[in-house]
Length: 82
Image (tube, rainbow, N blue to C red; front, side):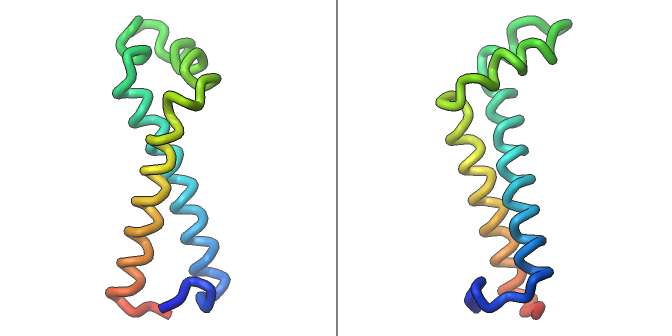
């Protein structure tokens, strides 16, 4: 089952889930970082301090995107939804 032969709806769903997985990975990486434990009353400001340094969160984003993409691909493969 080749993703290049998927219908447009499958590709859009796959892309949306990859983006959502990357965003979830960034949020999980921020929760695991020391900057999220800094000040509990100033959480939004600490997130804005964390975001300009992509070296600290890009592995989390990449992992989240890959896991979400593989999960969708395997679910599509197992259910044979075409």
